[in-house]
Image (cartoon, rainbow, N blue to C red; front, side, top):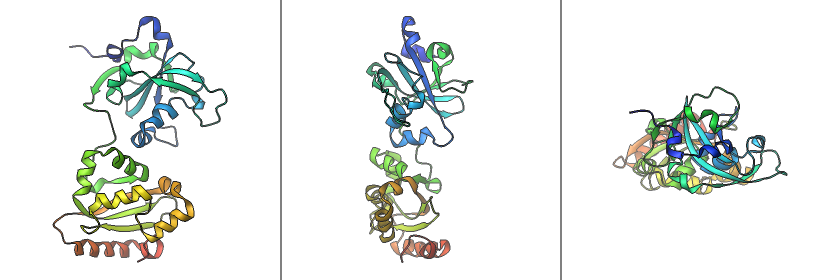
Length: 278
């Protein structure tokens, strides 16, 4: 059986190929669009697809196909939009176009992965130039919604990643977090200060504890409350990172977790140099 090409799924008319253009989104030297997509797909599907610096890539009436780099030569189809308006007065870093998503292709958004070796530096390219190279290598059973739970020893999340996981109710993450007691670490990446915390049965396990941070940014910890008051919620969203130091099942006594929390506070000196007040 031969390869399935992307155009076998999309079936753009030959007459309309001149009006279809692709935007390949990938690391730009400062931001990873994949991380942004995990937080909110529209950041890629609108902000990156129609960024002002791409204003010459599209024109009103064209069809914009949005891809997101997954790995070497693997790209995720995230949306297809008809360009409806050009914002001539858009400022730097603002969206330069308006577009409407084409519902006839919605079953493929976030699910179709193609293999394509990108040889040129520009992110925008006419579909007719490359469509014969876009090979479908996988169709996901459901729309991609972020990385699967990697194991307790490999959890390291930004605030926005944590909030997105909880907001979407990602089942594997929810199941993993709600069943565990833990000692966890919050790192302020802007200044290196640390906060060591614990999740026990009394505090509702790790899921409830981390959900509190996602909701208000501080989880009612005095020093983190002060941080939010002094620098604002956006500072927390931009700089705080969450990781698991140790995890325990529900049968382990809370006293064990609290003793390990104290040990980590002493080891990391988070009372003296971090955000632990006690």
